Image 1 (cartoon, one colour):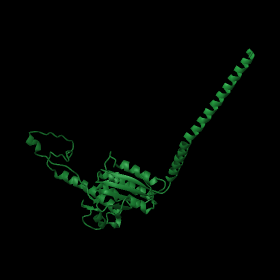
Image 2 (cartoon, rainbow, N blue to C red):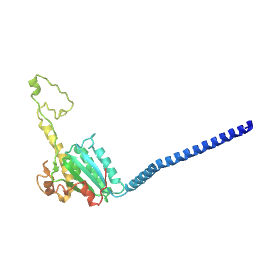
Image 3 (cartoon, rainbow, N blue to C red):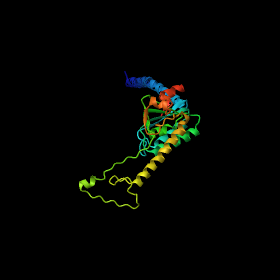
Length: 280
């Protein structure tokens, strides 16, 4: 074979090799495209389903539900049970779109009468501004003292038969250790500006004027407590003379006294409105 013939054969081989290489590349590219499609299609379907579910959940947020707020522990400034925290939750609950009722879950032995009064007053205001949304108070273990102060603002109070209810009273704690320092050989030096600035000093004897002043202070606070409970509960209250003495009762006995309305919990409120949708 001549040189030119060999050259042509070589060129043909190179050309066919290039063509075969291109075919091979196309086959691999097609293979990877198919493989990618097979791999990502299920993920795409799952993502679409998740997006659909998210959309459905978003739509559901505007459907009927029970808006729940919790008041747990001591009702004191700077705690989870402070008026500031509870009122913030109540405002959100009453303004919640689709809320058919508001539930305030209480599990509190009380605390500051001022903080309790703040919450009570705001509950009355929110009820008046949202008269289409009933307010249910659900008591868990205890709603005593300030806890019951707040509860009495509810349209209905639901408890367990063993819940602790009541303690409508006010207290001020102190102690006396008048002779302690002298027995220890310690001389105490107290300087005040104002005759009664040493009020409640545990190392001083009881002063009648100061004691009367403190009792008047407690009585004023107690009177405010009683008036608020009567305003909230109305003629549902019994005329039992022990009602405002600071005594506490079980949920069962509290119902007899008119301090609460019925036995139940947040789920029973939801059942009443034919929904299982409860949102904090």
